[in-house]
Length: 323
Ligand code: ADP
Ligand code: MG
Image (cartoon, rainbow, N blue to C red):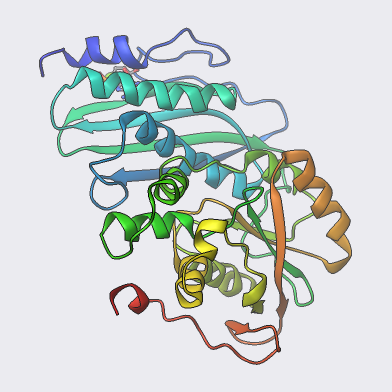
């Protein structure tokens, strides 16, 4: 490597320590848990070609690598504290590193968290972040708490919806044509997801179960249903979609919203009588939420349209883009 490994870490990733007892530079970082709190820990790896395209600007890649991890803390209702970064780089490209660090630290600063360690090696471009958050014992939002009768909710950007990241991916693949403005809007959704940390914190003690949307709503909901031993019905006409996605054929809208992936919104359940508290938590977090269905004793996920008739399961293969 042109710039040595340690110089690279020093130049791009080492900043003054804030809360950590010991940050970057020793064999371990040292974190002091807040008395009485539990750690919430999660790792997510981003691999070029699989989780991001080579066309992503480095600032956005830095943002997204941390955002997808913070989204996991949000889904558990944990408060972010610190993170580590394991990085494989094919070459030392200082323009790339400067951009990556800028995007990473901008989001870190938004959440008041610090980078406390990591690993750096030569190899195919790959970023693995581990986040550390904390929460009071017994208050984590989990996947196994959904109960029959609970309402099913999804968060979404104010004035926007879910499924835009998938629409962007299909546009990048050349399977769908979008105007310049529409493409930029959905590209932002794909490359600059906003982790719903404040909403997750506000849903502690309100939501009965939660998960963040990374693989697509239907698939992620299936995890909650299985872990909770319940079923669910979704009113497909209530799924929030952005103005851009709303201009696509209905089948494309449904596929993107139900099976898109990369949304990083929160999907959660709450008792029917908790609606006012859900709306208050969303308003305080500056996020929109939509009630899209309910939990029942049935099997798996069932979809129904505005007439209440079964709409079948969405074809998860995205046939609509190729046909
Ligand atoms: P070791 O050989 O003991 O595993 P390293 O030489 O790999 O340690 O790393 C030296 C220091 O730099 C350690 O404190 C490590 O946590 C930190 N570090 C290495 N890579 C990164 C990175 N990409 N981001 C942040 N800290 C890093
Ligand atoms: Mg060591």
